[in-house]
Length: 114
Image (cartoon, rainbow, N blue to C red; front, top):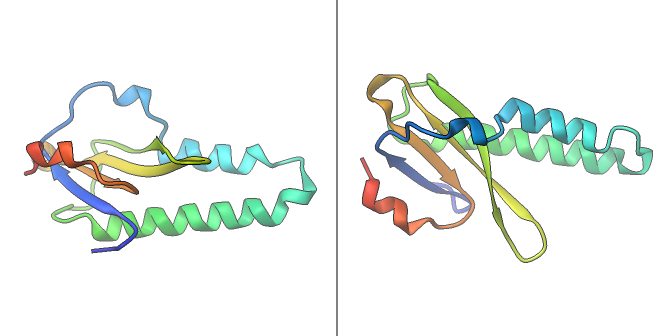
C-alpha cells in the first residue's frame, strides 16, 4: 500500500456519477488551464506528469480490481489548507465493486467495505 493514498474497496455506488469529472476531462482541464501562459509551461508539465503518475499508481494499488470500468474513472477533490487534493473513484463491471483512492483518510467508507 502506498503511503500517499488511502484505498477503499466498497459496495457499488450506483448514482450521481454524472456529477464527477472523468480522468480524461481532468487531464483536458490541466492542459487548457495554463495553455496560453508561457511562464507556466514547466508548472503545467509537472502537473500533468504528476497527475498521470498518480492515476497509474491508483490503478496499481486498487485491491481486487479486475481492470475494467462500468462507471468512471472519475476524479474527486477534497479541500486542503491551500488547495484541493484529488483522488480517484471508479466502478468495475463484475460485481459492481467501487474503488476509491483518496489522498485523505475517509473512515466512513469502512462501513461499506467489501
